[in-house]
Image (cartoon, rainbow, N blue to C red; front, side):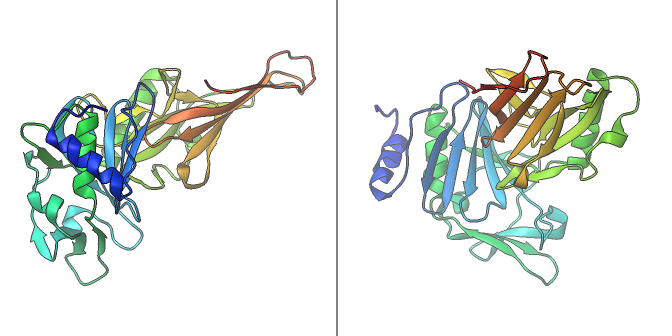
Length: 302
């Protein structure tokens, strides 16, 4: 591999210390890297940098460039919203503004520990920063090299507002009668290990035994990546609409089903798996002969 800048040589040196450096991701492929306490993934649209042990915060950057985007997650013990606490690096409070680009803090690259501390007495959440600098350099190498001016913005998605926006899209795409009674009562769901995004399903139509749903991924706005977007992607095409479905444990996958009204009618069932950026078709089973013989064809994605 030929390197374009000194940062690349630094990442290369990490190979001798246990880092994993795959080639750059082609379309619809995922490139992954990890070093010490941090792991990075690059997909077709953007890259994500997360703590390996307990990812309560995420750093993202669009493949089009632009600033790094920081988001933190609300956990079971502590709701990590800026109004409830503040970030500290090595026990020193950092007051970074939200929705404003500012120079990437050197302390975030050179510090030992980052922590979210509550304003009132209670539990805090922290993680080691060992390995984050290598992850930042690796991501930027995947995206074309270290930017002239590395910038950061702290962006906490307004999940309620994004849910409203998803409803507007659903109303535009689906039947014009009220379908919200079929929605999953749990509403927006966390995707295990990914504090930067949520998954949301909203009902779209009913027919025979089927309830069609639009499934969305919600997250912070990135250059070229909308905060409300289709949850599924297959053969390069985005998919909003799915049949009867259920989220698997930890929302790392879901199942979609279609069936006719009669006992021997055609049916199909698909299983979609989350790859870190989008849900992709993992397995499809189809019976399209409608001959009362359930002898399905298994369709494996390429």
